[in-house]
Length: 200
Length: 200
Image (cartoon, rainbow over all chains, first blue to last red; front, side, top):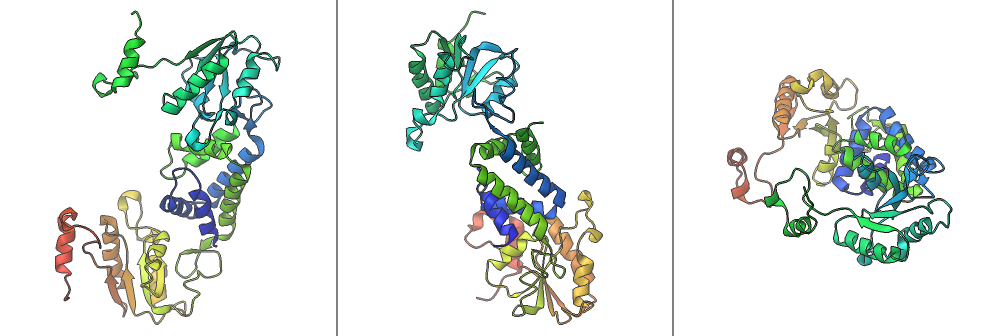
């Protein structure tokens, strides 16, 4: 197998990259300067060497704790539960959340063989009962799983798991996305927006 | 900059990969096994170390000459001219071509600053006049540039350059792609297909 074929096979393993895209990427890389290719290789190695899940929240980091868990100025009384690590960034970028996070590492999806044991649910519970001595003060858990069928099922399951603990369990509001026209919004979303209407 | 941000920036430089796709790829890689990430890094390094343009035809290879130029059983009297190295594979896969190739490395595109000097046209001419002692027997040059405006302009320019040499200069037939319905084919293609009609 030639080095180009070898690289094409590796690129094909990336999500959303088929045989033709992999070939196009490989030829783009071989045509460009070699430093660019080596820089990408170094970036991959650096990530493999240094990045690991934060032992507290499960977000990825390259220090002992992630930058959020290690920041004493964050509100230690709130934990926002997300499915995947990259969703932490989506919430952080709003600038409207100052609490901690917890990354489940997926969503309940029996068809894909993902049950409660595959998710970081035990770790979340340990953060509530103060077993690790860190988060014993948690007063609210915000369930920020996706608004998909699996995400909702995961939230409902988590609500059951968290019920015995003295914490408020909330979830993100459902409603009309900002900037969108009502006529293009599906009926279920409008129904949720009606049910969740607020005083002006 | 964290290793994940660093990798995301490198991935964003790939064609067709935007900020969101780069982030998704980076998190896919960090979530998967580290061996996969290292294998991709090794594949990139291997390519940067070993792959270079074939000194005869410009196709990429990891040996002194590419496998096609180095094969004495190929028809040394035909050269098929393509724009990019990855197009060699498209023609090879047909199994209906047994000659040599020549990779231009692009197409004439004044708007992108690509003129004749940016393409491997001198190298093609040297293959015809026997200056390198290898291809003095060339009897036919097939212009297989793309059927786009730039590709056609490149073919017309090459035809002018090659006219003084005692070689047949041909180009790929234009016509109806196999398997397609006439009603979906544009008029220019149908006109070309009519002009190029053949006895049954």
